[in-house]
Image 1 (cartoon, rainbow, N blue to C red):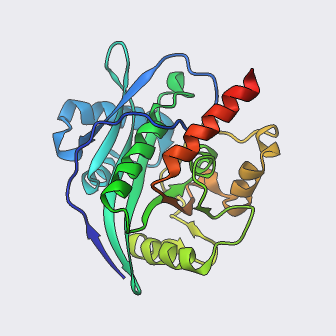
Image 2: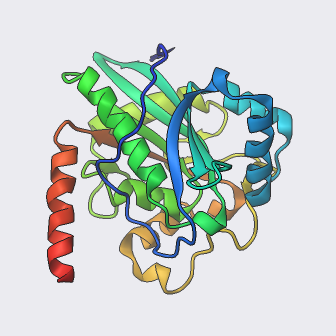
Length: 267
């Protein structure tokens, strides 16, 4: 398998679909996509301060190493005072697996201040980022490679992408499994366990702090949350569930109709 880092792109996100999330946002954020090299030292410090608030077993150097590896960052700022309140890092790759050539977007560190949980700006901006990449490559598969140590990121994928794996409804088809194994075995050669579908980092790996994104008994009523905990029972240790989803050109249209149906049901 061969993976190449793709050239830089710059876009300004305009929402076309919102990710389903908890309805308890107290304040609003807006999303912009910036190149990693454009982030100032002051912004880096603010990003690391937020990251440190929710994660353990890390240091500034490892955080910056991960950041510099990426191409872009979805920056989340308070709508009123424009202060950074969260972010998500993105890496674009070109993958050759067998005879197949695909474009992949790998998302890295992602965090949002608790006061803003429930905002849809991050999901909307990220989905549009993928959709624009698909428009640029209409005849080439475009995938989102997601590693999830929390149920919220898994739900962001499962609730929005018709084609996503792993999932409780069916086993992962060989074609998609091969693409996942090719990417993750290259990205995490020491830690990827294809037989489990997990990236099992060492015991001192970066993980969520206690009581951050806890899974309650009420949440376990959701079949997708149940599946996530079954597949990644040690998520609280920092183990990551290796995931894959596919972006299609028609995805915005499907969500437009889905939104209309939801609004009709509320009337």
